[in-house]
Length: 118
Image 1 (tube, rainbow, N blue to C red):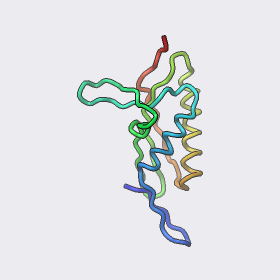
Image 2: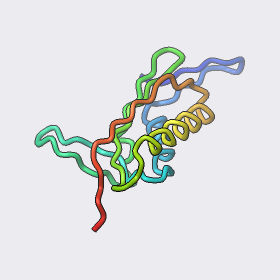
Image 3: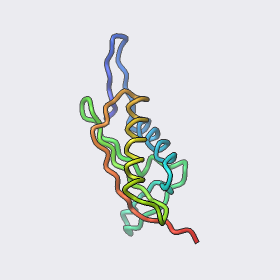
Image 4: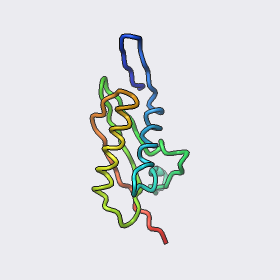
């Protein structure tokens, strides 16, 4: 379902994919987030997605005037996960609300994996 806004000048429809791309860009700017995660249904393994596939770890659900966003992320080893998530929430909410005009009601963050650099 696409987001829909009405104003004095007409109607605006925003595709969920566009919003997911905006969220992916905001997530990639957050320190400690290595990338988005995608769970393979066949074997249950979590895969790190490349920069061009950031929106695959993001689910956007729009209901009337508010949206819910689910983020599946992979974080870097040794970082403070609650602090990263707090930063992520504020960055994503600010980015989506200022760019699209939609109200973000809820953001769910799922830390799927931790990446350890050797």
